[in-house]
Length: 112
Image 1 (spheres, rainbow, N blue to C red):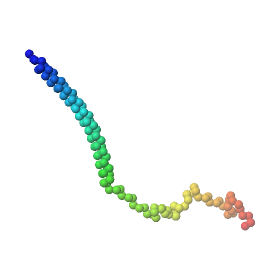
Image 2 (cartoon, rainbow, N blue to C red):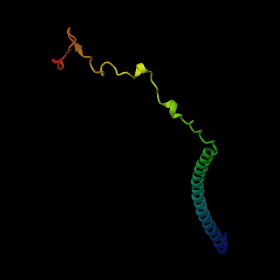
Image 3 (cartoon, helix red, strand yellow):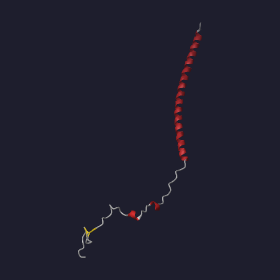
Image 4 (cartoon, rainbow, N blue to C red):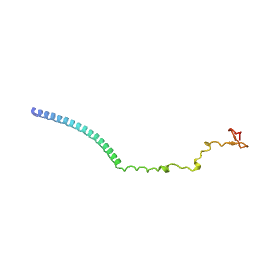
């Protein structure tokens, strides 16, 4: 039969083991929280790295070539003389002349 001291020693050992289990559970919980925080930070750091690399690549690209200068002398069209005439719809109507050579619709000079 077990003696009282051996029972007390067993109870003390069990209590010590339970305390150790609780402490270990707290450590595991804290480690899991730190691991989650580290993973979140890793995602942020990867995004920052990706953004920095993209900006670096854009900065390393050669600059776009400037458009060639426009010669304004050749930029202005010089239409032919025929193209410079007003369209018929905008031109002043030609005066009509009667059989006597007088302009119709205007004042006729009767002195001449």
